[in-house]
Amino acid sequence: MDGIIQSLGVIFSFSGLAVLIIGALLGIVIGALPGLGPSIGLSLLIPFTYNLGPELSMLMMISLYTSAEYGGSISAILLSTPGTAAAAATAIDGYAMARKGKANEAISISLTASTVGGVFGGLALLLLAMPLASLALKFGPAGYFAVGVFGLTSVAALSGGSLVKGLVCAAFGLALATIGIDPIAGTPRFTFGLFEFYEGVPFLAALIGLFAVSEALVMIENRVAAAPAIKDKVGHVFMSGALWKKTWRSMLSGSVIGTLLGILPGVGGNIACWVARDYARARDPHPEEYGHGSANGIAAPEAANNATVGGALVPLLALGVPGSPTTAIMVGALIMHGLHPGPQLFTEAPSLVYAILFGTIIASLVQYAAGSLFLPLMARVMRLPDAVIAVGIMAFAVLGAFAIRNLMFDVYLMLGFGVVGYLMKKLRFPVAPIVLAMVLGYLVESNYRTALVSSQGDYMIFITDPVSLLFLVLSLVSLLTPLWRLLQKRRARRVDADETANGTAR
Image (tube, rainbow, N blue to C red; front, side, top):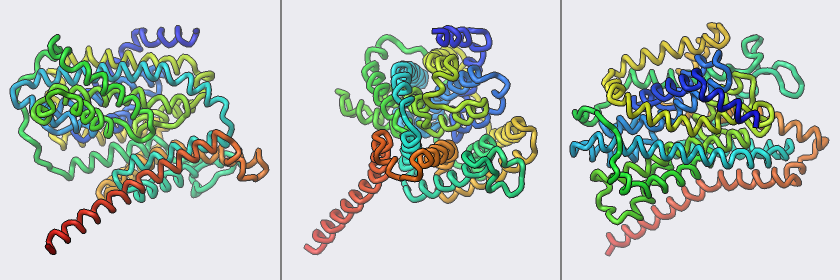
């Protein structure tokens, strides 16, 4: 009870409300700028939240996360260019509605649906995180190792269609996680004699380089022609009663789908938005409107996008497994404050946990207020040239990398990771699995070795432990599922090719 009271005191203090508002405003702008998004926004923000304390730091990041998921719909509607990948489904009907002179109506639907989805996901987090954490406290080292392995198998969903590339990047991330002090022996390893590596590869320098700097380099290089911008002036963004009546079912279904898919590690809004849109279309009495400015075609994916935020935080808090690349970055923030996510966090820092649980819901409400009041002003930010945005990103990246340890070594390392991230994007290698592996590497290695020590080197402990066996089986299923789908696609192509050949022969 004390943790609840303390957390609410932090949230509703002047500082708490200030960081929520600042996070919401930054999030909407970052989400609306094509090519950025919550991952890049958080990677740039973390160094500047170090002196805020863990509660205020997490509140600002959650507020930015939820608002950036919504912000992607602004450019999707006005420019037909999704600010985030999760807003891709919104662009179809949102831009079509805006071209009919209903830009305000489209934006009001996206804002309201995002708020509904965010609140729904926050409530699910509040109800599910604590029971799962209580269960996870009973896990032994073998169980925690298997949970970490299960989290790593989410590279199948983060690999952008190539499981092999995802596994290669995850292996690279695991290799980076071994640099530093051995967690069991306590001796330095793979440090190349550099004291800067004794604490491991600086996580924030790697994050900022892989996400932010690489994207800045891509923005400088690319000059992609976008769809014609909508000239309508953005004014009021409040939904009418008629629109509420028309879209509430799609908002509800999108919220449920987004929450459930958000809980699954590696899925997130990129997939949830399309699933929610397809579900709403299949049950809409007027499916022919989809693609031509359907209100439900905006409401369903936008509710799903923001609902995934609360869903992705469930495995993070309950099991210590990030549910998305963005929550993996939030793990870095917790580590920066000397905390490790997982069930032990509920006993070590209860006020922080409740601040996250309640803050996720309140951040969605703050997002609605910020969007309603300041959106006409923030919509102008999208007119900034890519070169200006790229220079701004680089400036904040250098400041952020230097700010944590006051070492130029971290800046050079960040720039190096930026080049690596740029080359990976050019070669279509996914960046997210590296971050996920770096986060989970310590959990997997330390518990693996602890389990073997406790069993005197008997590997059967990973089979005889029921929790470990369950998650290892789930890990196997998670890896084999995309392979099975690939085989099914190849088989279908062969059948189509045979039918075409037979038809030509006749």
